[in-house]
Amino acid sequence: MILLWGLPEDDPLEAVFRALQLRGAPMILVDQYEVLNSSLRLRVACEVEGLLRVGSQEIRLEQISAAYIRPYDSTGLLRGREAHPQSSAYRHAMEFDACLRAWLEMTPAYVVNPMRAMAGNNSKPFQATQIQAMGFRSPETLVTTDPDTARAFWERHGRVVYKSLSGVRSIVSRLSSAHMRRLGDIVWCPTQFQQYVPGADVRVHVVGNRLFACEILSDADDYRYAGREGRSVEMRTYDLPPDCANRCLELCEAMDLAVAGVDLRRTPDDQWYCFEVNPSPGFTYFQMQTGQSVDQAIAELLLQVPMPVRHRE
Image (cartoon, rainbow, N blue to C red; front, top):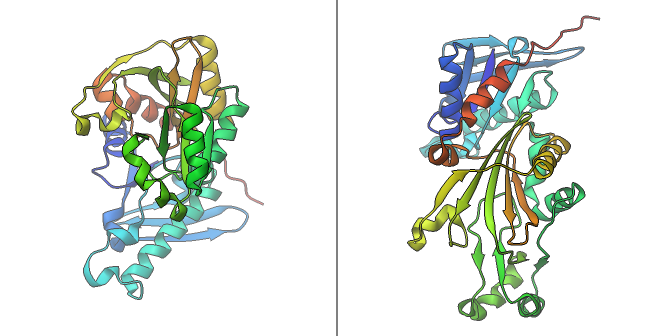
């Protein structure tokens, strides 16, 4: 039995669901919109046991061999009076999420990806140290709330981008003279500035020991939002050099990520920079452009995991 947790219209979750469905895999979808019609009883002793109910479907937790998770905050999905923190519905949603997250950390089932592994993405500077430890180059970075320090960094490098420090998605933008009058705003918000690295973007999706690489051709600062700037994006499959491919696999293994999106840039002089590793990648955006079957690979990864061995004492 394979567990999926998240929203049914979430593109990556839906793609993996369909891939598993085509294979006739037994599944339970923990739809977060149905959190008020869901319950979880968890018992932790010599073994981790319990009963999960979603609507009319019930499953023993011990039957679950693997899980693919892309959860949101269930309390944020409640509407009207149910969303009030003092309501019983809010407490139920909060407790259900906490209980399921606890099970995911303790279960012998194969989880893609464990919460503890994904936590490193919440701090980009911390993740950068992991990336550098595996031999990838990383842009020179400044995190500051001091406008003068930021200005000096900008003057030294000439071309600089800024982005979020956390795992919350943000638009990567290049500093320009128009930002000069707003630079003082960073006193209220620690901001990450990075040396601009010229070159071609390569996105690598790691699934177990398989790699799906694609090259992105765009002159936008952030190709994900190229359409907003009226710029085009072209993607095509790409063959990574063996040493770079091995480094991607080793990096994800060190981070305990079975599935990840690795953002690379190849400079004109063939130096490889790694900007970040996404532990819950939206791979469907790239899959639609390249025809790469990342969803099929994830389904196969989940299916090849044997049932956890249960020990009685």
